[in-house]
Image (cartoon, rainbow, N blue to C red; front, side):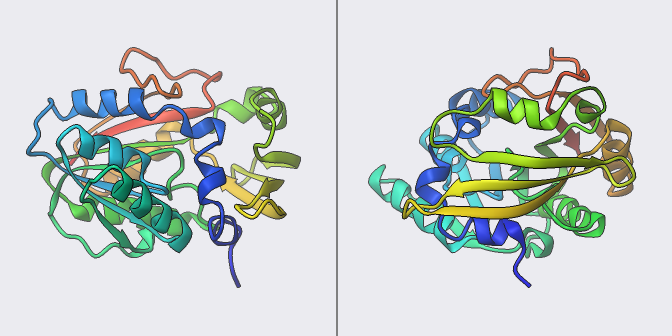
Length: 253
């Protein structure tokens, strides 16, 4: 059975690039550069690269990037954008739960719920983190964002979506947050690239900081730092609070 995220991303490439949550690329790449010490020799793996916005921007800045995604539509769009920019980027189709890399990369990024937290079981989400860990060299770094489980304990997820909505973007309804599983179940309506409405029954896993720390520690990461994630303005100065919808995780293998 096809999962909601597979259905969503099969024809959602042009529309995806217009969504609110994809507009912070430049600032996010500034942060990524600072985290790798502006070392252009850094080999970067972009997991769940989507339409390639981070891969393309980092390649423009002189980095060697490999982008992976499960969606043919998203990868096609990424390749078209790279071609238009006259950039050579290695985009590959892979399921993030079964990445083929071993000790190859200095840095792995997984931003804007590129893969992690979308999966239907906790075991699948863990396999994504495991694949990222395996792909990294010793002392490699993983940077990713994920949904902050502290947020829905104090706020309405639906109200958050409604307050950040713009015309033509995805609409969310029928939200219900399960305190036993920390999953938000909702009905999401998006327009596909043909302009047709697509209604999806979604569920996404929210994580609390202690869970993320335990998962990464079990995978051999030695240093784990967690901050609040501000769109387009990642910073180690942003202490994670209950007001942050996403958390920013930085871990060193």
